[in-house]
Length: 150
Ligand code: DQA
Image (cartoon, rainbow, N blue to C red; front, side):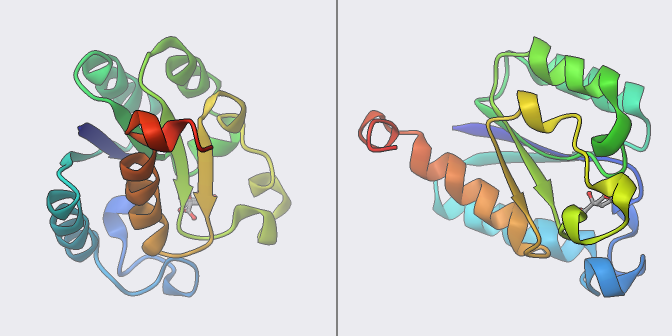
């Protein structure tokens, strides 16, 4: 199984950015742990980051026939990125929406996710563990036996 993990704007600053919301762990650290976990699950994981919506869309388009699923933290585009929403709807692989924080517990503008309706699922509020849980979800759902116990 091949997965793409795509982070949007400002997530490259994890570790130093608003630690009260996003923790003190750097992305490099989180990525290293995810790669180890992915390898243990027999998953090939590619991690990318782009700060612009167009750049994120280009990455999704390029991956659309290459991966079996996408773990996506769209950052603030989650709340108003209609072009990103359309890109998710346009591509075959299922996308799991991920957030470190719980957007519903924060400012009102974060309460809406315009991408949620076109995602396969959503994991939010568990800090860096949210990414790992998404990985786990893809691993558990991949087999036909697992899929039909849903
Ligand atoms: C975020 C939540 C968004 O509201 C915010 O704009 C981010 C990070 C999260 O992971 O909690 O950049 O997606």
